[in-house]
Image (cartoon, rainbow, N blue to C red):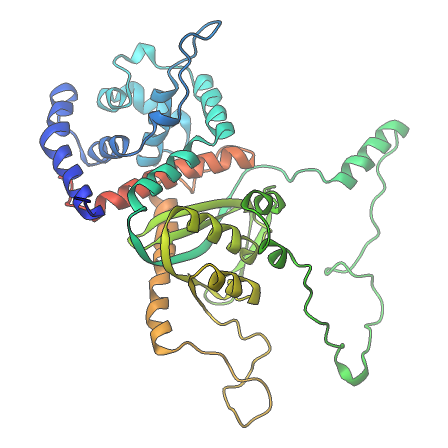
Length: 404
């Protein structure tokens, strides 16, 4: 007989309460709330399945990567800002050290070893693979009602990458031993200063919709090709808040698909200057490969015809907050286009979109997404995905009986 997800989580919770926690407490002492959560998460996620074994290799054997990976999960669960804070806690907290896999403080690796191991995890995309396996194993037999999609700002401490033109100018200047020429001054919008162009009738002629946009091309592209087109370089991002005020940051964007129950299903990282609509089709493709769902809930940033058509072609029902660009009146008698509005059923379902906002908030406040202290898109994504992995396991545990 096949068990539902809730029945599986109920059995897992009873196994933790009756068998695992007593054994662990007999070894390390009474567990606190965070320690119990960490033990449950490490028991649930298939972490060891994706870490290669180094036994039998030539040369000096490296430190146990599985134990270090458990420590990075603990860093996200305990919300430590830096790896040095994690190491300091491991030296002083015997219980946490033994849960991660070290019996004595003298055998703790140096901080540089943690750094090299983290670079390996980022290069092999370890947390991404573990998260995908966890989602597939727990959600494959579940029909999900809603997928909420949104992005959140990720601030980073790094410089912008050098463009090709800047590199060529610097190379030419180095050969001639002369400073690189500066660009002529332009206006704030990048146009040359001068009189404004006037159009006949006061308005520019309407241009037909282009079929060579990235969103249109994505509809016929495989997932790997879509991801290669998206920029992952550090950049300046801008976003309007609920009051219409612009906020700016330097860094990246984390794009999430969140299922009912506040369970992250898919995640992508792009530069902060990538618009949300450019990531909608890749995220929908990733989520459709992992789970089965009915509705896609998105805000006005995703209101594009190609996105809506692609969602319907995949068998989903898109519910997108209407952008109403160029629509200024609700009257059907006055000139102008009428505003698009939700039906009462769409309005009721669209309220579920707030779950992705709650996931973004928890990820930053409780699982370390606010403290990005690494550089490069691969390492930033690995840091964030350790938090997403811990958050996903925590939300799955909340669907079952409470852990006490």
